[in-house]
Image (cartoon, rainbow, N blue to C red; front, side, top):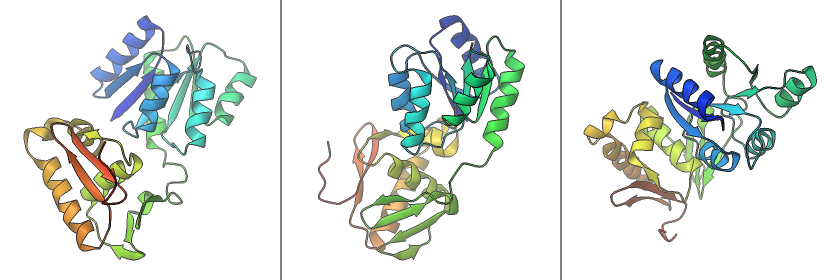
Length: 230
């Protein structure tokens, strides 16, 4: 599990990061809202721990922006404000849970596990589109030109990650972390083989787009074969 930690307090952030890593989580730690927004939109994290008092883009604005952009990653908000109105504001902005400072790490861990157990909101209604290629992630339904296409689970997970980031280069280690839960698979060529099989499957179905290789980095999905590789 990859957790995006958004906290500008160095002491608290380091404590939470070390605690989560000791429990087996991978942690990406961002100190300001603007960088956190980009990280959250990349679709690589399984949960977000979000401090609401941030420099630059504040936590509530960040949260509202993510929800408006369709990002449904579970969010656990942290704040020193303990009033009922403050908690209600956070929940209405799209938070899945709310924890006030100071807090015990054991409670944060329990609340994080709880939000991770909840089914993604609107997952079955969401549709990703890249040209004639369509994917409904919650139902693992893939069509090309309106015709259904059988795609194995791992390939479908890779496809979902690529489609959520159409036009962006995704490093192999991020693909491995997101789909397999670890970058250890990079010792083999499992990522490359999975992408190769997915390419063949989509090409055989008549999809006009492509999954382009970016030498030394990873892969990028482009919606049409003629789209430039930047």
